[in-house]
Length: 159
Image (tube, rainbow, N blue to C red):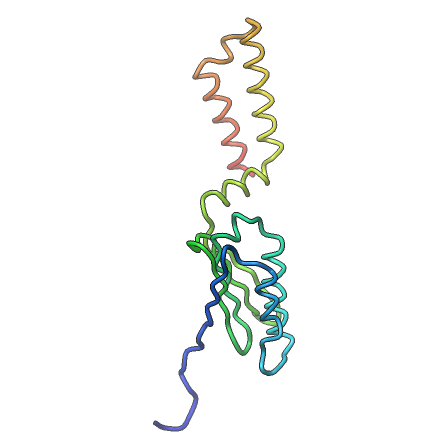
């Protein structure tokens, strides 16, 4: 072995969390840095905050990888369908979602387009009530409902 810079790849310590990744588990590692540096601490604090704000369904199938200045951790649970990376870049902490389950994507879409979803539900309820009363039965035809859903899908795509 010669002298010089090492090409050794930094290992990521994996921590299995069951039944879900929790802020309490991440909190156990907030002060892990052997150098007690703020960068490492801040990365772990950001990961703890992300997990604190996440829903239980996300945390049950989560992989959150934290790249600190001196050590890296991967907290995981379940099937790891939801993947997040937290790291320091040019002095700032960055959070990147690299993978999300279909359910989490659907929830995010509904959350960000709630007013549109509510309009479609109210409109559909109005059509059903009208049809029950014998009014506007033509609004419940498959083609009319398909047109309403298509318009809603177009609205979501634009946002």
